[in-house]
Image 1 (cartoon, rainbow, N blue to C red):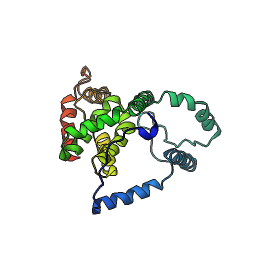
Image 2: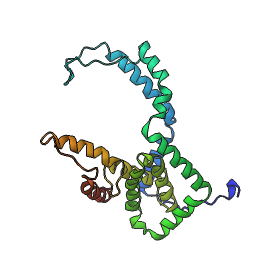
Image 3: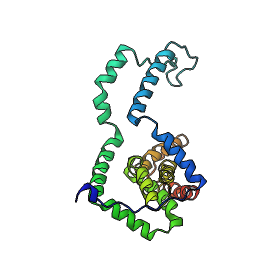
Image 4: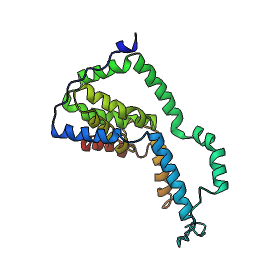
Length: 235
């Protein structure tokens, strides 16, 4: 099947309401922004120059453990530039979400080219009432944290596609998915990688009172499960 014959979700024309015109304006402004990689590089340069300026400032604050004066590291210094350039590959390879995101993107690429995503979207739209589309999308965004940070890469753009196919403004779908992924980062009724992280915080706090306390990684499960329902309702 050629690219021109690839099936796409059927989209309905969005009504020309005040909200849709407002979202269209946001979309036009957003499209004028530079590529995210260029923005990231620009912020990198800004942080480096800010660190250079602040490295000459003497702060009164002290490190709470060592008692040493807190100073700003000049990222433009020769030793810092050398460390940054020589460790760039290792930093990139050891970035925790990278492996999950790459594997997930490969799977999404295969699913998209095989038509699986189009069929899945149509089936979801067929069984999901229009009034429940937003909470369903937010719930899926929350559950996406089972795959760590892959939700930011996968669910947010899919939210736009799903809303577009349902005849709603795609930017609203992106916003709903972003609310679910970000607002539900620590809320999930499915055990995920966030549970061991929360367990470490909770155990450290509990050991201030009783050093012998040992907690299960699912000790926050009741809170995170109920929180997921609260996030869906607020979203």
